[in-house]
Amino acid sequence: MFDGVDLHALASAVQTPCYAYSATAIRQRIAGLQAAFKGLDHRICYAVKANSNLAILQLMAQHDVGADIVSAGELHRSLRAGIPAERIVFSGVGKTAEEVDAALTAGVWRFNVESHDELHVLQQRAAMHGVCARAAVRINPDVDAQTHAKISTGKAENKFGVSIDEARRWFDEAAGMSHVRLDGLHAHIGSQILSLDPFRRALRRVEDFRRELVDSGHVIGSIDIGGGLGVAYRPGLDRPIPVQDYAALVRETFADFRGTVVLEPGRYLVGEAGVLLTRVVRVKEGEGRHFLVLDAAMNDLLRPSLYDAWHDIVPLHEGRETVRYDVVGPVCETGDTFARDRALPRCRAGDLLMITGAGAYGASMSSTYNSRPLAAEVLLDDGRYAVVRRRQTLAEMMAGEQLPQAWNET
Image (cartoon, rainbow, N blue to C red):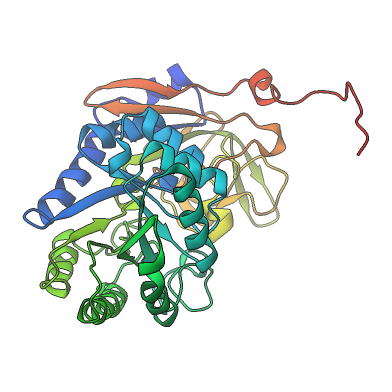
């Protein structure tokens, strides 16, 4: 059972592979975060990239959670799901002029600016639209988040943000900008962080810089502390930071700040609320190894291949002896591997398995590699379920393609 729904019955009705998300679990995470920051002027903006399904975004909107977006597509999704523009922040290093135009037209609350060139593009486009854009400079505090290198974003060699020295120059020239109000600071040092120490160092540097700016006569209206709170992919081994401890650190660090603190949680809100249901296609006996071949693959859940990430794999049957398996998918890549030498109850073709911790960076990073249609997604809520993305058909997968009908000369 998952959020009151029988997973065997669900898999039979929807077929596999499919994602299932617990609305109850997401609501509990939202409520816990809101309670921890109660009394502090704060704004929660969900990192849409973690899971951009419209039903998930609607759930956020229903609980007064805004959106942290990184593309015009995520802007469109958020607005369509009911998240108001005034609760949206636009982050990302590669905003195009067209995306800036779309965000200005919608009236997003704030832009997190990551380069001097982007700051001037924002000034130019805002002037063209006759509006004043509110902006925060994303600081790169050069702090090691103690997480996987591919999801670490706060070190000097990472592409994100600018140095404090450069940010200082931006504020010095901000008075000359007619259509940008630079009055915010932003720092996001990485994802899946399981220790308070990196947060403590990064936030301290942000607060020290804020004080310096205020002493120089600048007004700071918001501090965006990013996201990064880790979750328990390995229960008993991963020890996530208690949200109350995180909130206490934020309150202590910014005790003298009278503006709005912005949080950008993604994985923390949805990661443990999702599972990927999959069936065994066959068991292959190799030279000294047992391969468990599933109908899910790396195109459905990329994290193990991309990050060597651990996900618990739970066979939904009992009463069989333990066997050690390499758990793999059918895609023609050696990297299409979910786990190596994993101890599981003996499995047979047709058995149903659940891959846990798949609510974040699962479906949102999926693809149609090997011409495999995108999996279905289902929202569960206290004993009931609704399909929130039907399984892609082959015709839908190829709908944008066509044979050459007319050739053009350049």
